[in-house]
Length: 108
Image (cartoon, rainbow, N blue to C red; front, side, top):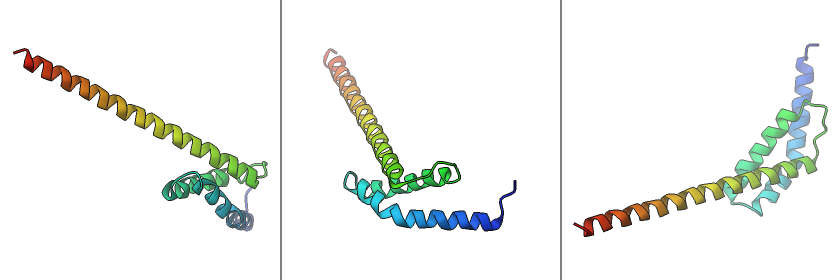
């Protein structure tokens, strides 16, 4: 069954209305928990995910958006934590290596 231009336009208008109705709430939810930049980025990601699901039979509601926002934020926190741990490990490794080089130089 072919999708008509009229149906595409109707779906687009419906999604635009859905976006306008909920974007501020999703952003505020994230902004309380994250920086302005991260809240903006994650809000966009949430609505991209919503747009991808828009044609499915599942009805999207504010609860789904907030749950998706929360999960994206947790994923970001985990990513940042892994990055900090890797950075700390590299710094510690560099200090150990530097210490070993100094010891080898002192032994000469």
